[in-house]
Image (tube, rainbow, N blue to C red; front, side):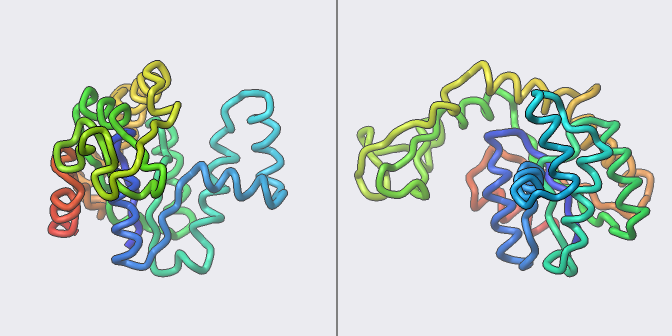
Length: 224
């Protein structure tokens, strides 16, 4: 299965992507990682992208999309892939759709995790990291993984926060882009939703992001 994944920061998209990766043995491809890989390897596209990044400019779609296509054509993607982090606006969605079709890389499923913006922000700002193991889940805004007496709920160790998790201005900026249904990320998701509704061979799956990880995963598996 070739899957495109949408969800705001704080929705648990990365966690659900990891679950899909393990279940279907397909790579979870994040657009930012594609940039880093091309730049570190010194590819032609990576060099072009770096020039824009160094100037503080956005990398044009005619560089980004070929990078993505190159990644999706690699051997580990032959049985499917999960793409996350791109597209971020409707124009990119149209260009990606056209490029995938031209390359013979059919898109099968689009997944959207739906979560209220305020809940998403609280989940980001509520994350607490165990000093002994960052994989121990702790969040002051999620009852199921609430820290115990201010300590890690799993091992009782001290907890810390990530600086970017507490930067409300940065979180709001990212969410401004995601929740924008006119020219933001949700606009790109809705482009594929319209394709699915018109019978273009794509399935569009929505998930309620409010429940816990296990409940969201169960809903996801029941719909795939």
